Amino acid sequence: MAEHAGFPLAEPGLWVERTSTTNFPAGRPALFLDRDGTINVDTGYPDDPAAMVLRDGIAPVIEAANQYGIPVVVVTNQSGIARGYFGWDAFARVNGRVLDLLGERNAFVDMVLACAYHEAGRGALAVADHPMRKPNPGMLLEAGRRLGLDLKRSLIVGDKPADMQAGQRAGLERGWLVEGEVSTMGRLSVSPLRDATDLKGLVTFVRSL
Image 1 (cartoon, rainbow, N blue to C red):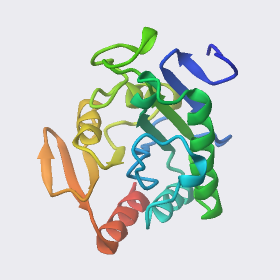
Image 2 (tube, helix red, strand yellow):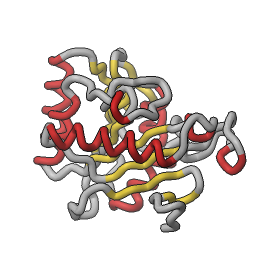
Image 3 (spheres, rainbow, N blue to C red):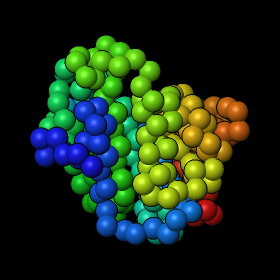
């Protein structure tokens, strides 16, 4: 993997970082999570580590995946980088803070992928409908390739329809949408993530994988 300015960039607009040393056997399902608005409270274009606050209830979901040998993969669009609002250095600081906050709750992420491509971007990042940018499935497929995942049995948790669309296009069959509704998207069954009961159901599903 090419290193750009010390960051784990597979290409100018794609961050791929292995954040744990856990070795997983091939064929495991993964827990995919969006970051902003799903793991941490969405602050718009997040560039301040001190402003990061975890959403209630998400750490136990990640902890359950850790306990049951399920790889945890963050897949996040970061158009603020393409737009020039902040750089990969700010992303690194913010993401590090989010991972630290999770670690304080005994919840650990195994891989982080971030896509900075956007049609409103500058230079090499000015790409419309890049295959790595959700709702396209590129980040999920890349993680699947690198970790040898069973994507069909994997699940995705996000706060936008684009997260669910990325999961559906990657061949997943289960998704949880923050503040969403029960719906079906192709073969993807979407469940809402609204309250403690929904979170408990999600944890139970993770433990059943």
